[in-house]
Length: 122
Image 1 (cartoon, helix red, strand yellow):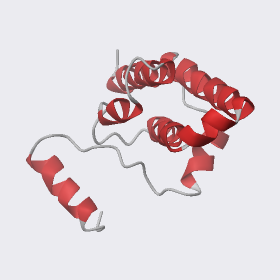
Image 2 (cartoon, helix red, strand yellow):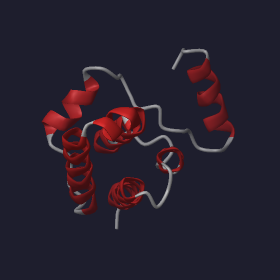
Image 3 (tube, one colour):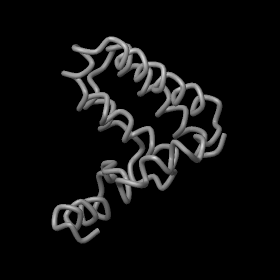
């Protein structure tokens, strides 16, 4: 199996576990594949960030919560199949974010990239 499919399977499982409450969203985000350039994984990262950010709204609005849950389940299913997320999902996040803030690898190169991100030079 190629690395892209392995990463997508991992992210699919992380999204599913966070959605079901088996792991905290923050833990799922920290376990994303480091330094990936896969736009589908970046979109899934942003979708999970919104899950955590919308916590108060999800408590107040059951319809919103159900729609967001279905959306995340769809993302998880598509990634589990190894396919790209639909372009409209990817473009929806690219409008607002140049790239996902996925953690870098825990090595010298990753530390340098993290430092430049901190300085907002990346």
